[in-house]
Image (cartoon, rainbow, N blue to C red; front, side, top):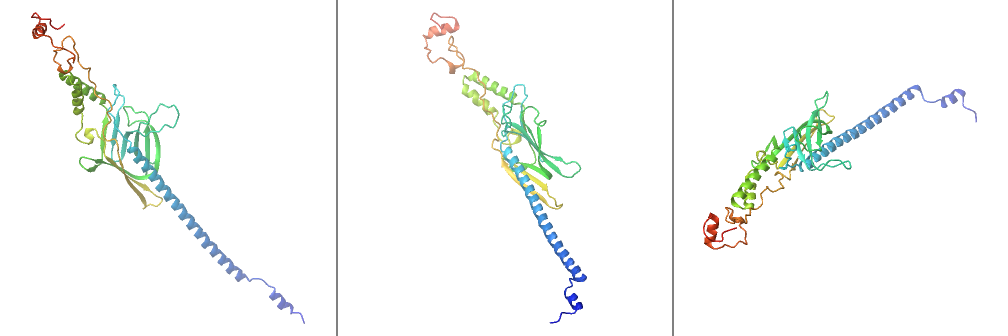
Length: 312
């Protein structure tokens, strides 16, 4: 068998032509571009989904905290004599300040209790049309609940914050609710006077306490009567990375202690007892063991005349 000619043998051993290499390179580039675009789209969707979940989570955690602390709001008629402490519930449509019983001590042997003052409000971000939801807590209750305290940013990028308060008597929502117990000591002294005067005139201590209690009893459940709202509705609008897409959340919370606390009883004097003159003008405190002497002696002893033994 003869060998192939040299020209034919070179043609059989030759590689790709330049055109074939260019077509293969173009196809490879197109496939790489398609794969890169797909990966970028998937990664962007994952990132957007994670950011959306983060916004949802932040809003829900913040609303849950506001809801939980509002449910522990309270007012108290117990106040120092010098008026250096007062409880308050100052609710507006965009801001809320209240005293509550939900403070947690984070350090050992600190001078704190479970009571404190909390404020929720929006603060504008510098150079932006958005705001931050800020929580301010003051662990010492004094006569200035709207000042001082530690600040904490709960949510960034908030567009709107709105509070509404349920009026139990009118059965409607209203945009503000303000109650400040700053004259509790004066009110307590007034009740003590009523109880003391009533007990002194009638000799009935229980009646004096009851009249003092009735004098301060509220017939209604509004802010003017010193009550807290039955419910509070909270609405918040949070921005996202898309300009026209916002997240809106709305919830309600019920306040358990609507009536101001008043644990102590009105002061009343001790029961009047006059063993020397059991005929005093307080019949309810006449000694039970007293025996009436002869009529003449009793009358004579009371009025300084007569011949009886009288009352000694």
